[in-house]
Image: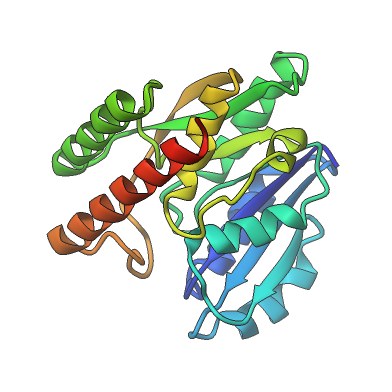
Length: 233
């Protein structure tokens, strides 16, 4: 398997059929797998997975009975990956499955170098979200001493060897920061490419629900940044 892409799903019963059908449209080779993580969903996701997964040869599921965080779900998926290159993207259909194929093509055009890290760079977002992201990016860049832009953009794809040396990765949304910062710190060739970021089709975000949620997200990210900087000195 050349690429394993993890898709964490929490209460995404309406998006699961879309995820699978959209990936079926873009996967035209047998060396790509999707690993959908049922991350402690409390809706009808389990039944939807049970019905649909057997119909798609490129897909399999990892089940987590209790949700312990966004990062925890992704990490469980990454540990089960068999691909030479691995990574993750979102399940909310704000990220185009074709972006995963574009990322893999970037890797292949760079001789499948094991020191490459490919990540999206979001375009077409609401003005306030752009301001929020720019502010967080500026802080993280200045504080962490590495250029860190649009940290939560998807997809993230890298060589399996890079993942194998991770120590104490976070179980929450700080995982995106952890992975990008570590890639920069270890001097991987970080390649960004433009991805569109339209409105979510179904359901609601598990964290981006307004100003209060953003405030909590900022606090958690800042707290983790302090911890991360100390641990990786």
